[in-house]
Length: 362
Image (cartoon, rainbow, N blue to C red; front, side, top):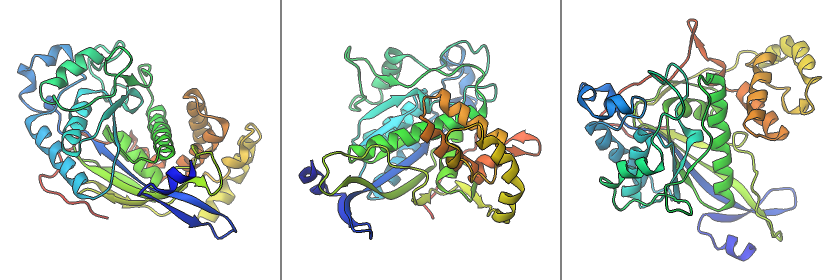
């Protein structure tokens, strides 16, 4: 095991300064919003899918062009990637397939990366899944992407991992779903010594970027925009035979760049010490109700009820008590997740057309 890990081109031996050494992977991660939706154009009314797949729109012509531009931007970044993981909604699947064409990567579909399942994102009579099943999805993709490889099951059908959400899903639940799934994917990828591209929806980008950069509040996520991140993560202690598979994700430092048009503002916490003092009594009450209290006691930006709500949601998603504590703590320190309300309304990522020309920027 050690011999194969040490030979990996993105792995180096690192001294942790405490008398031990470990192998660390330079892991890259890109998270991409799907490209321009056809149902935001005048062409949608005459399209045959407008009646049958009201919540599963394909890309517009510009969407296909912009998805290809995004693929070229990721390819030109020089970062090595091994897999694309995508929401199965057609706009994401087509965006992912355009990227796969350019970068020669396989695609895995996961419904846990799917759209927020609420009245803001879904229209009409929402009863059950709003995306195409594996057979219809492949039929919709095959003509335009005959050479793209999708991960399939034992019956040779496109495999869609994840679970169907119940309608209406709260924005809190969706945000924790996105953050928890991305954490799982990055941990799994690191254990396999690969980097991944995730293609998903606007609100997912907002909360995941907000968890990686706690002082950022994300204001604008255009179609086909993306964030590109890198970190150094421990994968194997020298002399060990066991690959690490649960290294923290949002607690680690990421080098992060975003594409043009993706706008954020830095909102530095005011008097963190004072926030802690004012909040200490409520936090102590909440901690008394949780076995993982020490993992939660630094959530400065959210009140105890909100942190407890996040913890309960994560528990329902199958997170362990340690994961619940870590993610709730990180959510509590994220300016983006704390700023959910804007003038009395939920802070959502809107359907904003992306800029025609953009370059990745810090």
